[in-house]
Image (cartoon, rainbow, N blue to C red):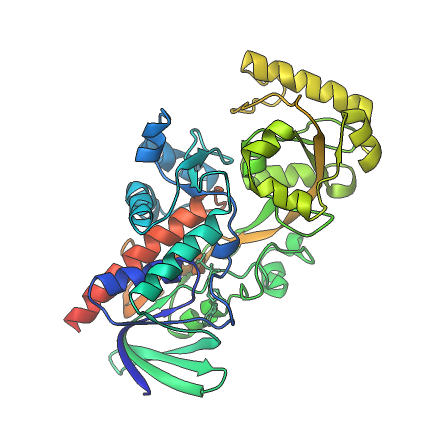
Length: 449
Ligand code: ADP
């Protein structure tokens, strides 16, 4: 071995960084490796928010919410196929994880609505800037402050175990150093999902063959193979989520918060066709049933002003704008007369507080201010719910439901937390909470071994 350390973390997304910082703060020495030349994984791209219930931020805004409501929404969104023990960890730790991030310098003071949630519980930076980039920046700064050894361009290849089956470290391949062994009592796999690997995706869910993906290039799922070779059991691999709103013009993912803050979805005929803030699986299916298998997010300047991220979409040229809905329709080949009627009818629902057509549960603002915008969207592969089987201490288990001593998993590489469908805002919550749990548990384990 070239190096000896208490805990190795594989992957530098939100789960990996949370695990590294938490393990360090529990007294462990830590090396974090990342196969890509840049840190942050997909976590860095997350735009929605961090779900948490009964937080100080919610209380300050007078939002009524509870851990039980978050639990119910998460289970229902996952079609009740989630592992209840893991959901329990997610929801009961959610406030603590927001506080943990806040104590490290994060701003999670803006609270918005995401699909499938019965309250505003998606925490994000003030002004609606991307939550993922912010969270990764804060975690990275904290890792630097703690002098954690971070190695980019370094791929985790194989878990090394002793004769008794206990983890002894990980074989890695550095871009310049080549292969070497990092000896460690515990290894935490935080390697993310495999949404960018269409071959793997299509094998598990043939409907998704050839779909574009929202993910960064590293989301290929090699962590799944590393874990499987170490004897890990897998769960729920067949559940793969399409995000309903990828921009057709630019391939960029348009955050659910655009709908949460008031945008509606219409088809080419200018008509609404779904409760815009339903769960991602239902919204994706509904869009694929429309003419051309796409739809338009329609909003006005009041929605634009409520969410900083929208200016980015406008800057990228994916959100054409016009002074009236008829003119907007002309630009995008949408029936403008029908669109005008649709928006007028929707605005009456905002006034009455009840969506008589699709029972949309939040109606934050009427669409009648300034310019109008249209973003053409279609679903893309976004999140893989399944993965390595873990218990509520983030210990990875084998097919006999026994813990593999010294091997931990956190984040998208694991399965069970989200069941058949993940709610928007639950990924950041998952990676921070389970990253912390894995880091603390691995540090404690390492002290005993
Ligand atoms: P999560 O959201 O669960 O934290 P991310 O996708 O954000 O997951 O981050 C996972 C990170 O792990 C990505 O940056 C990815 O490039 C990295 N990664 C994946 N496989 C390996 C591997 N075998 N060795 C090192 N890093 C890996």
